[in-house]
Image 1 (spheres, rainbow, N blue to C red):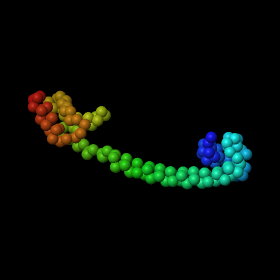
Image 2: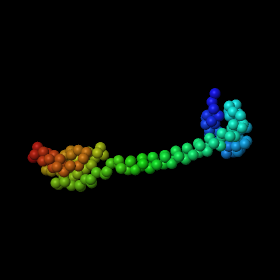
Image 3: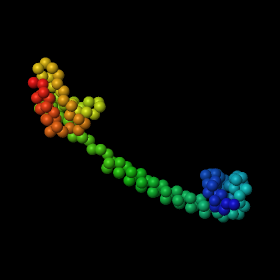
Image 4: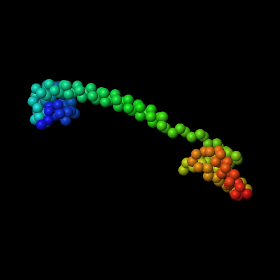
Length: 140
């Protein structure tokens, strides 16, 4: 057998609504599940205590939740990736292009033909210079 407090907590939304609409004295007659489990006097004595405790716990929960949400926003902001350094439009006479796939390529028209160099996902001038030197050395 459940205690009167457990019964009220099990039906807390119904009890809260009934008390708000009918008042504490009339709510008991509108809750058949509660009438089966406990007497009217026990309901009148215990319900205000349970509702006050539930309200206080809810307010405490809401306060904690707001704090956690603020902390979550701060952490997400702190962990957000920083924007990469802007790509130059040209590098050593080559046009720098960031493709839709996220890869950086260098293009140049030389001797009537199009040349391209694949740099990678992260811009690195040293790597780009090395790749250009390799490409020009192969195809002269």
